[in-house]
Every structure is written in structure tokens, then in C-alpha cells.
Amino acid sequence: MTMETEKILKEYYNAADEDSRLLSRHGRIEYLTTMRYVEAELAGDRSKRVLEIGAGTGRYSLQLAREGYGVTAVELVEHNIDVFKSHLKGGENLRILQGNALDLSMLGDGSFELTLLLGPMYHLYTFEDKLRALSEAVRVTAPGGAVMVAYCMNEATVIQYAFGKNKLAEVEQSGLLAEDWHCLSSPREVFDIVRTEDIAELDSHFDVVREKLAATDGAAHYLKGMLEEMDEETYGRWLDYHFATCERQDLVGASNHTLDILRKN
Image (cartoon, rainbow, N blue to C red):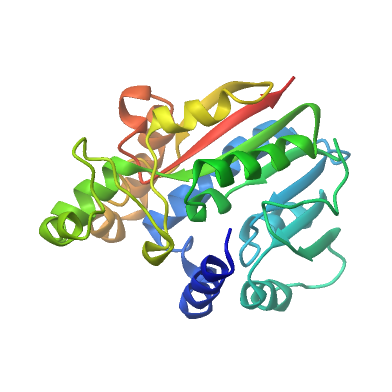
């Protein structure tokens, strides 16, 4: 990651309301789905050590620390760390470090039973940087432990942005869309976009086994206006539907976000 990329990310997150992104109804689905998998992995065992790389403003780390897990949170952007610390109530078993997903040398090999990489892959624009981030996440995870990695997905971007916002001509003229409709990202677009086969290629470089690839928000962003207007009972039924279908591989690639759940051998 270059200094220019870091500068762009810091400017973006200094201005973004990252703290409330997961609080809207459609955003909440991503959070609730991710937490279902996290809670299932931890299974109430408070002896398990948790690392979150790219912790943002602490939505996941704080919740897990308040549930009694020992959590280490690594975040690049100082503004996010400041917001994160403002939420502390005291007494949380939580360590917050400023750091980069590409270099976790301050953390030892095999230190955590669960490693969460829920943001950094959104902002790494070369295959080499993605490999390095995943390598570091796998390295610090204990054998038999889990690594959960979040990605932003290609098809949702093409459908919702290029077509949905009438930006097709603009993105094509800017050279941001390949002939096979794969988005071509750079730091100025902030987010890197992948397909399921890109994720599989990354995984193939490591001694891990994929246990699940899940759509963490599914169709939520396509239907966000509808979701915000649903009564609570219907919204609850939508959650039931989403949880029942989020691992269907014929649907995963069209989600805005996915969660790749890996087991370290």
C-alpha cells in the first residue's frame, strides 16, 4: 500500500460516517450475518482470543469485548480509532493498536483463535497486497483457528452503480470496466471489487480450507428502500429468508459483501 493510497483512505474515512453504516436496516443485515458466523465460531468459549484487522470504529470488536472475549483491534485510520475509543465504557478486555493489515509484525505467529479481516480487502488494489494481507491474517491465527475475510463484490457494483445510477458510460470512458464486466479498481475509487473466483484464487495460496462463503447482505442493498419501510414482523421474516439463503452459491456473487470463512490447517 502506497503513501498516496493511505492518504486517500484517511481522507475518505475522516469524512465518512462509518460509525452508523451498520445501523440502517439494510446495513444491519451485514452486521447481523457476520456476527452469526462469529458467534458460532466462538461458541461461548471466552478463552478464545480474537483479532480484528481493520476494526474501523469498533462495531464488532466492542461487541465481542463486552461479551467477555479478549479482543485485539488493529486499525489504520486515526479518526476511526478516536471514534472507537469514544465508545469505550471501561473494563472491556480490549487492546487497540494502530497498524496496517500488510504488516502485523507486532503480533506473534498463532496468537489468535479467530482472526477477522472485515475491511482491509476493500482497499487493497493489487493481487500482491491482497496476498500479503491474507498471509499476515493466516500467520497470526492459531492452527485449527478460523480466519473470516470480507470482500466487496463485482456484480452488485455493476448492477447498482453502473446501471442503477446511470454511470455506465462514465465508468467505461474511465477505463473502470473490463470487457468481461469485471470492475477495475484503483485508490481513487476507494473500494476494490472482486468476484468469487478471485477470492478462490487468493485462498489457493494458503494452507487453509474454506468452510463457507456467505453473502452477508444478499439482496439488502437492492431493496434498501423497501426494507426501511417494512414493519418489524415483515423485516424479521426477511432476516429469516436471508439467513436461510445466504450460503447459496448461486446467489453469493450478487451480494454487495461476502464473508469467506477459512480454517487454518
